Length: 601
Image (cartoon, rainbow, N blue to C red; front, side, top):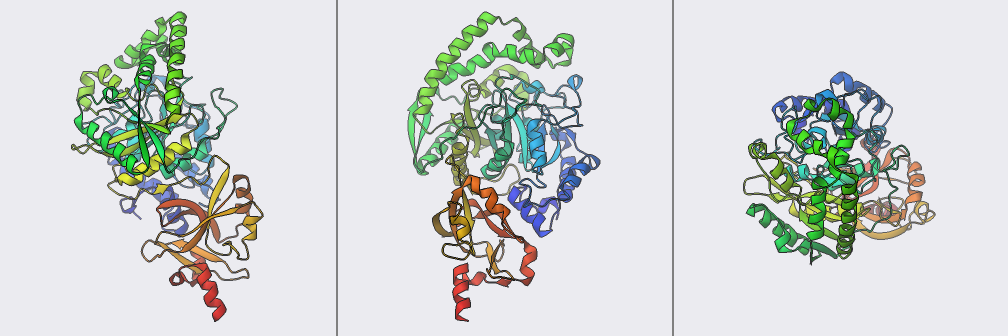
């Protein structure tokens, strides 16, 4: 199958294709390399892995299947301030480059989960900038219009996802680098709670504030990636153990800045799109609550007008003092003044930040999330080159305060300007509200029904998490585990409870597998000849899920199913090889109907 024939590079699609034998991970990487070769002038990559470099990663997958590794064969890009063992890390500065012996903590976790690195992506030098133009490798071009900025500093990572060169990408975010590029390229950008992901093996910008971020085409894949990379790291003193957070609710309160505090920098199209997005959220069950945004604005100013510039200087102190000419002039002009910031100024500004945090926390506590534009406007590359500091500062109006105030955020696509350029919004809430934010963002993304990235293809699923903060996990069953049937006791013994009976989306086929008793059902996705199949959604303690899954015999496995309401949940699936000796019972609509028919035979 050629890459141009792939609907997308989503985890579910690739895993289904791998199981069916219509694609291999090597096929996917080869097609990505071929596609990347046609996009050289967009300056997406600093280092694209060769076929020889990819061979070791492919060999490591040989003894596994998609049912054994959550990210089996899933290609991803790595921002080039994050280490990949054996490949130079440049941080966007050729003279700074070094070759690490070990991968960054987050990369190690992705590799163990079966993900395949595609390459190291371009960035604003030393992750200092929100434009994507501050790189010796050239400005990364917007995936919709090459005359416009891609956003930064995680420019290459965002464009690689939008262009279909990987399923997801890693970025970093200190001042908005994991959100602004997402908005400008019509993709999802997750700025997780500070410390939720380890930054070991990441070239620091402001070490006390830095976050590793995730770019993807939809919230479903983003949630899967976030689950894999979330972990405490004893070798990173800034990691924090994840704390239980709230789940999204049907009705929710949306914090909306006062009209006079919203800033679109003369971009009337952006203002209209923001108002339209708010209306869509109201129609989804939201209630708008006007908030005072001034504490957030004041905190944002501290990032570059206060002592945190000194932390950027400290991150590369030896290098900037010994080789200042190696930095781009604009990068040096921002970082170099950090040397002269006094300890007195640092303390005074920390006191100011603490006062602002108290005010902001009270405001955020009164709503479920705050909604802002991710950026008030978007600019051409030429405009940014002519006024790099002012326009970059404008891009940070809604982003610079986030890590200073210790909030979690999700940037999500929300529409297109009349010019054809993407517009996005950001939802933010206190630390450890990551799952709830993803749920709200998924509802919005589903409602706006936009093409995925710059691929021109649709198909954004409505995602709901597989487990919530109470530590319970949802599971969809379709056969002998249904209520009252022979294997239902395996759920009941683990403390499971039935949530509801429902049906799948009309794109599955149901089979009675050979063997038994007990007789077993096999559910297989078939978008051409499928039908809606009766299923049940159960909930069981998360601690019991691993033991339950370990007892699921081949050819059955646990995958992700689409239900009739558009949500996606974990549930029983069947390997395609099993249907050769199975009986197709799709026309009966469900397992109970099959058993009734069998008893009457």
